[in-house]
Length: 350
Image 1 (cartoon, rainbow, N blue to C red):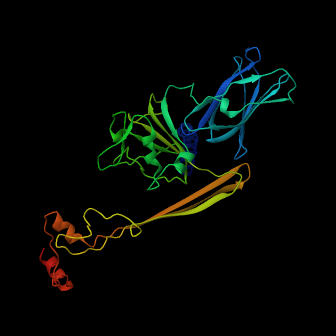
Image 2: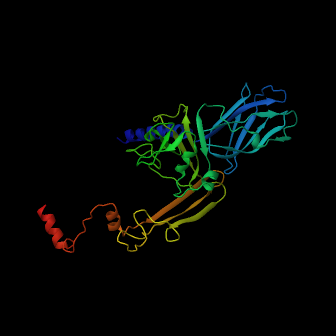
């Protein structure tokens, strides 16, 4: 029995090692291109290295016989790219942003010279178009989440920035993409399914996100790649932040109080139907939290943590006024009905 248990454990670990990279592939970035010389002829055997500026992690590959190279499964972030071969000057791209579910095409042109010499290329000369796939998508990055107003601090509301999207008028509060049902959307969080099992496709899902924990997300609206399945609406791929070689953190508090010039609810007028003044129903909303991230082992292992709490109070002491305005009756309990003895007798006779 112990040997059987050990075999099962080994099989489970092997399956986990195979499935997780496949599942995470869609949540990563990639870079590809062709290396040529000054005449336009392809150059093979060129060493191409990409280095994550924030974590100093690097990946290296070599261009093939056609001069093409490709590096996949890269963490989202800013990268430095170099291409070098003996007899040519080193191609150097100091910084370029690689985004989620996007293949950046970066072609390198090598000029004759010593490898110690360097040709620096600006990142704005790199096309932001995905030449490798035909999928239609839109990226919402960290800057947009910081600069655009988010009254409830819900980054999923920025899905509406994508062409072909609109808010539905149902109680689910979801999105329709190119006319599809809101339940047909597929939400992924760091490569893991993040859909509500009972009502799939609506925002937030199992784990909700906030602007301080979200690095970026991509909304794919058409021509999905082969790794996607299940749903016919949009694919919303969310990538959370991760730690770097530098310690970073912060704390925040967002508050809303209607006592500071806030408007009254429609059911809570200043003067009721009898002409008496009414008190404004309170509305207090506090969102607070913190983030912290940094290295555990520099250049190797990192951590990132995030917490957000929400406290809301919106009491309605004028419920009877609201009901009277709607033309309905409200049954209020009498003092006798509130007595514990009466309640026990009622329960005993049911």
